[in-house]
Image 1: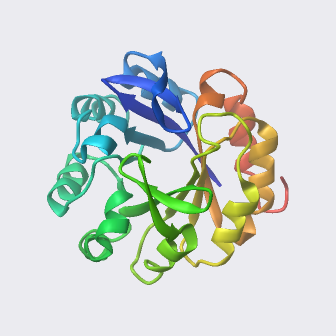
Image 2: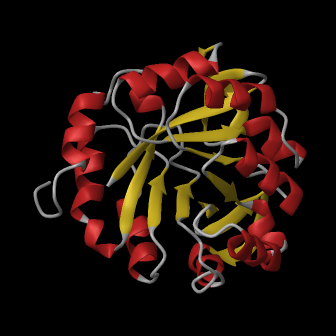
Amino acid sequence: MIIYPAIDLKDGNCVRLVRGDMDQATVFNTDPADQAARFAAQGFEWLHLVDLNGAFAGRPVNGDAVAAILNRVKLPVQLGGGIRDLATIEDWLKRGVERVILGTIAVRDPDLVKQACRLFPGRVAVGIDAREGRVAVEGWAEASDLTALDLALKFEDAGVAAIIYTDIDRDGALGGVNVEATADLASHLTTPVIASGGVSSIADLAALKRQEATGITGVICGRALYDGRIDPVAALGLLNRPLGDA
């Protein structure tokens, strides 16, 4: 199981939000490329980047910060936030992003997501962010009528690299990851699922690891890494163990 340290970008800084609220942003590093280098030095194998301003604007906003990270580290990067058309997808992939994450556009235009999967096999993930079971879009500012499973099933045969499932009410709140909902979603899909939102301790990682057989292949971790609640060495050691050894 892969652990993805999160670098959320707001106004050029590396921040963490609480439940997606842009007014509740804590700046952890004013140099996102430096933060990326720290994560690389700690042994992480991937980075998870989100352009928070872009998610609200519907277009890339923190492009300079993303470019600086790509220039600084050689780790594969997955990027979400404000990616709403094929031109933007292609541009980021050409610039060195390994995988783009499509969220709002997956609700608004699922055919575009499927087209992107055909054009860029293995390099498109779908971000499903849910509040009380319903998918939220536009930087989590709007709710839709879709359930997380309804949306995920639209892309079962599309070649999506992963579904990134976030429980918004848990995100950034250190209240514990929603293991039950994540495992339930993964068990209904053949597409791999990456857990996100609320990871606060090694115990949360162990609980997800025990559900790996459902199809959970990774977990995104943010605030708990920044404030020291989760030790990188311990986390990597736990999640790299063979299934059943958690």
